[in-house]
Amino acid sequence: MSPNPLGSPTPLLGFAAWSGTGKTTLLLQLIPLLKSRGIRVAAIKHTHHNFDIDQPGKDSYALRKSGADQLLVASAQRWALMTETRERQQEPNLIQLLPQLDHTQLDLILIEGFKHEAIPRIELYRSPIGKPLLYPDDPQIIAIALTATESIQPTIPRLDLDNSSQIADFIQTQLKPQQEPITMDTPKQPLLPFNQAQEQIFQQITPTRETESIRIKEALGRTLGEEIISPIDVPAYDNSAMDGYAMRGEDLPTGGSATLEVIGSSFAGTPFEGRVGAGQSVRIMTGAKIPSGADTVIMQEKARREGEQVTFSSEDNHKAGENVRMAGEDMGEGEAVLQPGQPLGAAELGMIASLGYSSVQVKKRIRVAFFSTGDELCSAGEPLGDGQIYDSNRYTVFSLLSELGVELIDLGIIRDQRELIEQAFHDAAAEADVVITSGGVSVGEADFVKETLDKLGEINFWRIAMKPGKPLAFGKLDGAWFFGLPGNPVSAMVTFMQFVRPALNHLAGKERISPFRIPLRCSNRLKKRPGRLEFQRGIMEQNEQGETVVRGAGHQGSHILRSMSLADCFIVLPEENGGVEAGDWVEVEPF
Image 1 (cartoon, rainbow, N blue to C red):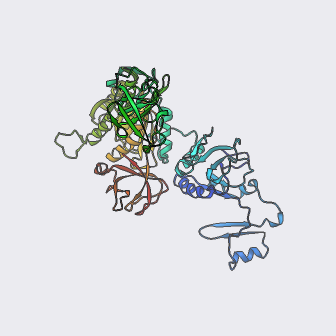
Image 2 (image 1 turned 60 degrees about the vertical axis):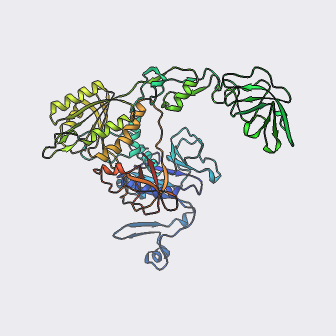
Image 3 (image 1 turned 90 degrees about the horizontal axis):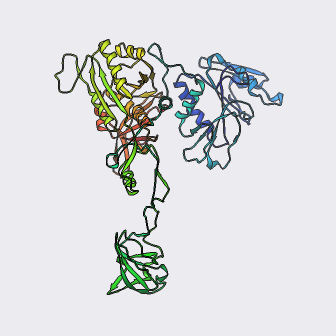
């Protein structure tokens, strides 16, 4: 998004939508968000109605009504220029209005209305309005904002109309598409939006293509590396879903009852070899093959048997075809039933076994090396020296990595010596696909970690608009991907869960899945300042009315690891949120 053909030195962005879609509501959310990110914003709104911006009885009103063609009103807080256009018989256009703004004080101008002007726009769409897209083929539309439930799949970027933070991320990206890499020499970095940081990581990391064949008994928790095609129908034949009696549907009674002759039995693995004719039935067990001629099974609880005869009543409302599992009902021959990237759990392995596979191709495990740095750190079990603390982050990272099924390389604690740290990074990058450290990545810190990273790698040091976990380093180190987590224990956990875990899953070839979040009422007040996306630790519980609610898990400091132990979810508060009152709805991300 650059200065446009209208000659504006400031980028313009319009919002197009039918009346009632929520243009003004969205702008009211976007302006404070963009300003919190250091973007200076102006807004221009077009209205088809006459309007006044002062009131009868005010001196400015009287001066204007007396015939002044222009009136400039000034105070200590603001100034406004009012220009009368009624005698011109023509509405002003953007070319006339834009010079009225001080572009030296602006980074972006948001425009509502002026739909015939050739400017970049985001179109807003809500199907309940009952209108089609305004501009289905307009090249000036750079994105479409829809609600999450809309089925429209545009060829240009799709944004969530109910997620103003995501739309702000998109606008910021358009303003600075060629963002310079941030290094330790960057004196003052702007806060990078959370979603933008995630996307930059995903855009750089390419999923592994390496696979290996292993027995299905060993594949639990691994990632599928091949498409699974069913070589057979599952089930392989029509079979019974119940213990009961197999019969022809046309022999069901339409009134009163019907009595049929029992001519044999069908068991799983030992089917009945004959054919069921009119007035006949076969005793059948669950999973047994449906005999030839039969198409219906009456469960034994609905049948009354005497000797070799069985009676059914029409009062039980039997239907032809009931209690029969059809061949191929679960999986059909030639059907693709699992795709590469699928995590293999108990159900998936059961499916693969049911198709006759004894082994399966899986993605090779990702190798991850991790270590901590610092003379103040002490391993668990050792006596603490003066000024030392126990290294909790390494054990936390070890546990989080273990849950992902990666290969672990624990390099321990590396002391603050240039040669040792440089050698540790060389060794880690040579052995692993990913290297993870904690601490030493905050801009302004002075230690050998940052010095070594600048020397050996291509690393971005980010200040992310999130809390906790603002400092994060990401990039390449001698061919391995590198993540530098913050030193505070909660910050390390949150950044791992929100950035590293999704990235490792992506690198391992797993499908990308959005985090599961649910709306709940918050039972207590939560403090927050606007400007950063916040992950407060929460506890889900039932209130006295039986409603599931969430409450904060005590002190939210980034050094309070106990808050993560008490919590079972994140309370996700968007950038623009300025605090939560008891009873407010919040978005919750369960652990």
